[in-house]
Image 1: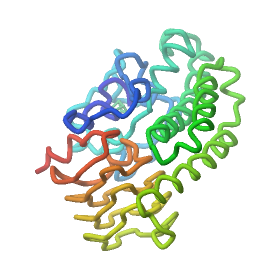
Image 2: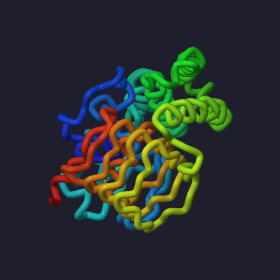
Image 3: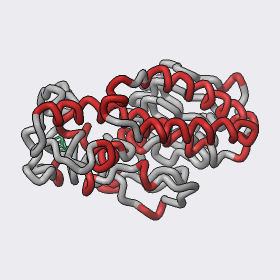
Length: 293
Ligand code: SF4
């Protein structure tokens, strides 16, 4: 969902929330330097998030010739909420400008386009891992594993710089597993330092629609938890691990997420919240939270 394609730009605008803990400038979508890859490479299934079906490798009919979204200002009312949630973690500009040297899929051969669309999701996964690893290095309690984190971050960064052929053959799942072991250890250290206890381990829990207003989830592990449409208004989520938690339509109004880690912008964009939601500095307040107040 390319340039101004909404998936990235229009939902992240309250910069007052941002107090960068480290340099993640390359880990945020820069649609200006991308050839609209997410609007072409990825498939959609018609649903509450997308108004239409679209196959991978086929340009969205709303994508204009200049790689801008033709309905950018109306994505939500037109049924493309999913586009306002997505972020490529900077993979779009990396693949467009580095991996393929600035050659647009529109002007290259069909084979060039196909390879570009194949490589994009691989680099997107690697960039998501870079996001987590970079954040892990900002957590003082994770100091015992900082050396391993740095090594793994450098290795992951090096992978993103491989050739299209090498990236196409990469077993990104295996690399993800390797990183995950380290992120788990990071989480244990970080949560132990803030009082997160075993009884707050909600890893992978089915909490869909759960009523958790004002819940004490400080230092909890909510890794991969299903919190779809859960009510977390006023909940204490300080220093919680939110990696992979499904926050679609989760109500975070007045919740406190200060110090929560491994939270990504796409997760937050999919949730509901308001001006009273307290956020970690790594993410920005979604524009649509205030737009509908
Ligand atoms: S509607 Fe189409 S062109 Fe617009 S952001 Fe979504 S995928 Fe991209």
